[in-house]
Length: 558
Ligand SMILES: C[S@@+](CC[C@H](N)C(=O)[O-])C[C@H]1O[C@@H](n2cnc3c(N)ncnc32)[C@H](O)[C@@H]1O
Image (cartoon, rainbow, N blue to C red; front, side):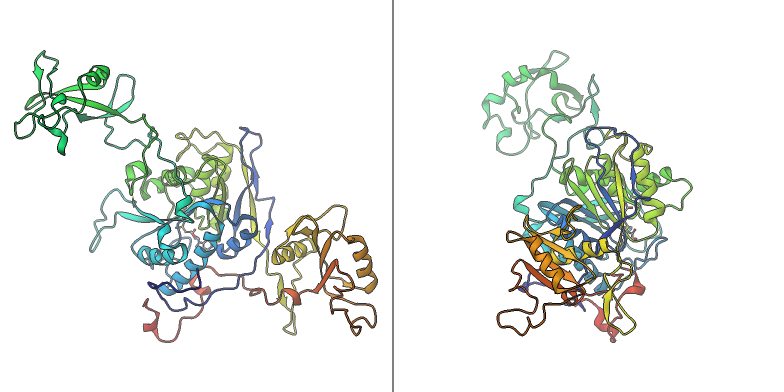
């Protein structure tokens, strides 16, 4: 969010508190990663990522590699309905929900590419508050729209007031002026219901009256050349007549009528024969997405539950999956094959499954155990081509590719028995170097031959991280090896300069003036103030949330 306060603003208790997140490293678990046994196509994608853990830390962990790279983010967060679901806790007080979402949406925005978009599903519990929140994060001009998704196909008879039939999809662009969406190809499953007729070759179409209607141009007086007789199937001549019986006009002139005669259908109605013309579904460059997405086109909650049940008949079904066609619509419009797609509230893994089948690269984050019980088995089936459901047939998915499974590394620092921050015992030298690279903004890329080149910020600027105490001789040797054309940042547990140096004029404490190619710092001191350490769970779980302020009345949104 920007620092200057907007004139119109939603406030809530704790809005000003922002976590200072530790940029964790991600640890791959090859046992849980999965790849197809064979290449299925040249464009198979293997580098997809499934991350197990809290999404705030996971998103922060992705920042170094993915800032500005994600084309489409779809999130389906807990709606804050107050109801407890089988697999996760959904009832968080409004202010806390807003803070937790704001922190995540902030990082999500930084991950989006300049032409990317964020899609958030919510219901009436929080959608309107989230709209204001996103206006603040993205800027109101970057609001693209609010899609109404028809989530249910029948009323709930036990509803006290409305039986809610829709969810919201709030859609924001990182920068609307740079966003260019795809149209929806008018094809098989996407064909709107009003294309209700089939021609001899199976093409879908609907009929529109050939008589001009409404506006200035529907009368003989205004369009005299469009008033002429057309021959009906029974041989009679039919002239365009307006509703009030006066002379009207056709939409087409006689030449066009002759050229397009195969598209003209005659209908014998109450007032006799009338000509209509066919509008085919599969012509043109597709249609723009509309703001109402009916369940017939993109599925409903009933559809998605059936999809999950079909995939895993013996598992306790995941409570709130989204239908694959809903995600297909989002990804069709807002991404292209090869683009990165992200869902940081993975659930049962619908976004990853659909992205995979559509040739997009994907990242999903999920903190619940269903990451292992539902997402991994689902994505394995997708990779194996063993998931015939959802959009598989529509996109002709045959299997292939794979994904890597990661978990978040523990915090780099932990407190020792005297309450001092020290490097966590769980970090081996490789992990330590990678974590410090991330903190210092270096790319971790350890050289196989030069021990002090563990990462770089430019072609000539390197980083070396060690838990050793470096002696004056070791520093002198390092400086020699680095040479005059390169620079090195050295982070070590302690170091010693030659006796008397510190007291000499012109010699800085870290020796930089003696060794102009070296900057020497101590860890953990150097990184201590960068972020908050040892904080493992920023999740939406109620038991992990900060305590509410004392006066209950104050917790309401202002
Ligand atoms: C509504 S579900 C998403 C369903 C998903 N769209 C699907 O089609 O299956 C929300 C998910 O977000 C997960 N979640 C909630 N808080 C999270 C957090 N802090 N980090 C990661 N995942 C979280 C929940 O465990 C739950 O699986």
